[in-house]
Length: 202
Image (cartoon, rainbow, N blue to C red; front, top):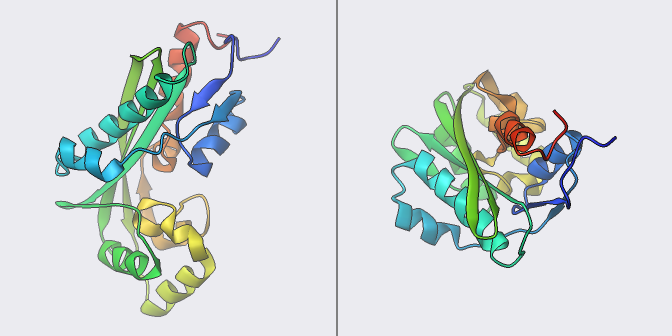
């Protein structure tokens, strides 16, 4: 008997490789359909100073965008924001921007706010958000350049210019929080929601 009891596959409204990998590893059958929203416009509308609210709003907007064109489908939206002090960061556009972000984060603690929203037929059924705190070590300039070389194009794929599950782990001296929150998909709460809804074997 399969663990997933839903009538159809979950739809992941995100192009994140790590979120896709998390669902695959958890045994959740799904398909990927990115929402392709104007995230900067949504951030501006939300008020960029409240990064936790921005993450929640982006997750909700992604879920609703795909739900609106996929009648009956169960859609999972997810997003993540990063704050260090009063400054929030977005995905760096190139290597130079990645270097600048990492120099700003070096030796400091920042927060990752991860949010999820589940929708069906233009209705939000479930929402959750959580936060993790990460402290980068005071790495050398030489290490920074070697890291940028090793990570290559991946530095533009994530806010903060790192992927903790890959070479990015070498940037850190302390990590506080749920591993799945750090990867951008708070998994345990959404699995519990699926069980309550009879979509997963309890």
